[in-house]
Length: 210
Image 1 (cartoon, rainbow, N blue to C red):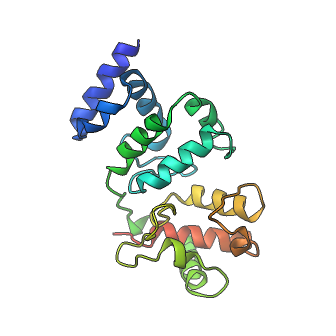
Image 2: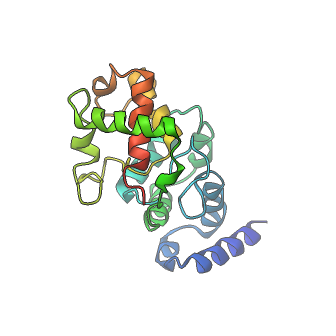
C-alpha cells in the first residue's frame, strides 16, 4: 500500500512540477502518505475547497513549520482540525519542514470578486473601515508589506485571500481565549462583535480579488 502511495505522490509531483529537492531529506513513505492526506483538506495545490480549512499556499515556510510543530507538540487544538495532532505526532522536525516547504512553493489563490453576495459587499466595506481604523491593529502585522498584502515577518501568517470561515473561526478563538499564541495579543480582537469579525474576514478574503 505504501509503495502505491509513494508512486501516486511522485506522479502528482511530476504533474504539478514540484522540485524533487525536498525528497532528498524527507522520508519517502511519510511523503507519500502525509502529502496525500494534506491534499484532502488543504487542496492538492495548497488551496482548499472548504471554507473552514486554511489555504496553505503562499504562507511562509517558517509559519507553516511553526504551526505544524505546535499541533504535533500538543500546543494547538482546533475543533475543525482535531485530527491534526494525531496525524503529525510521529513526524520529526525535518519531516515538518519538508511538508512546509512543499506548500510554500505553491502560488496564492486568485479570488474572484464576483463571488461576493450583496450582504458580503456591505460587510467588505465595513471590514475595510475596521481594518483601517483604530479598533484593531491587524494591518501593522499582517498587511505591513503593502505591495503584497503580506506580513514582513515570516512568523506571521498571510491573511489576505484566506478562507472566510477559517478566518472567522480563528479570530473568534483568539477573542474568546480558546486559542493562544506568543506572538498574538488577543486583546487586539477582544472587543470585536461577531458581525465585525465576519466583516474583517470578508474584507481579508476578497481584498486582493481579481
